[in-house]
Length: 282
Image (cartoon, rainbow, N blue to C red):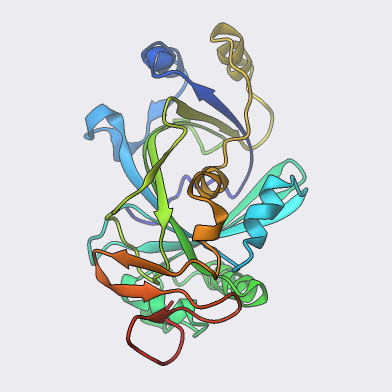
């Protein structure tokens, strides 16, 4: 999945929890105004997989900022769609300023992830784009990473059915299904999950995203299907279901299918692979 030309860098978004039983009728309604995202056209149930690796401090500052409803807050994450060596991983800063969402992303090559998360500057060949704004995004990501003392905490995965405006990127609607989350502490774009928890297991998360004004047909959609807006933060809900202690420094051990056991040191110290001394195992 290449650099997304449909990315809404500045937008408003509303979220709803809906029953799967109404999604087919909603799909019929939405298809009169939007077209299916290219990445979903040949996929089962018109959906493609989305993976996120969230980074946070040991005391989960970004999680608590979201739970407490801070007007100005941000999240740091890696966003990717498969585990193929040739496909990119996007370093993303998703910020909220009052009611507006600001999203920046920079695509990088997978082999660069450990060095970039350790604070190194990228080499030219490690970035997908030579546009200065993408390097600026990566620099901002790194600055926030260092200020926060953040490191990988949680792997999130779901299936996304996305509908987009045929004319521009001003309107976007998504259905997110089968949302799963589990702790993950490595600087790697992993897709496997060992023992995830289901997030919002009885519902589909509907997101309405728009860059200027709330479209009139969005209002009709909400009215016709009797939708009620909810706070549906996937990362925060995953943390709540898992228990924040499993992501903090006092969580002792966690074994993963892709590598050795990772032992988590007391809060404020770096995690170490079991049986090995040395620098941070990000």
